[in-house]
Image (cartoon, rainbow, N blue to C red; front, top):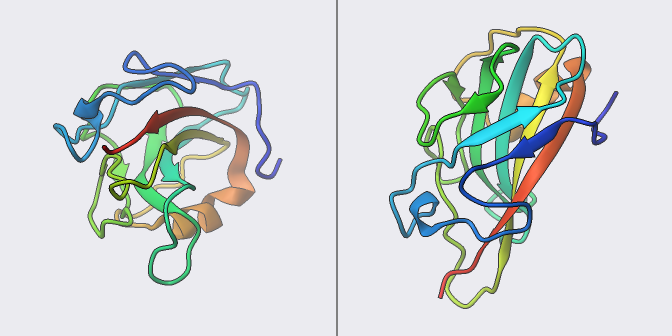
Length: 158
């Protein structure tokens, strides 16, 4: 399938598509992951991965694109939602250099940033080890990707 959008639908009770992410889910607030839910799951889905990425961020060390806020994987195919502040499943490493979720915290005066919460449907349970970066995860899951879509939220630090 490659990295093309599918019919998978991603929503959050915390914000709408294109809407502002509440401060609670940012580095200026409680810094807890927002609740997410997904539907219209592709047939044959055996597991999921979730990523939050900010393409509006300045380049980080190593010259990668944007800033990675969350890498979560080994989510069973029977799961169709994540609770706020979830600590379930396997956490990867974000660009803060930590495991788990790190909320939006764009530089002061940098304007509105867009945060892409991706849900990726996979045709296998891969049993991947903790601590993978976004790029390590994508390399391992690409051959198993059968569907994906995203919810985009915004945040501006005043």
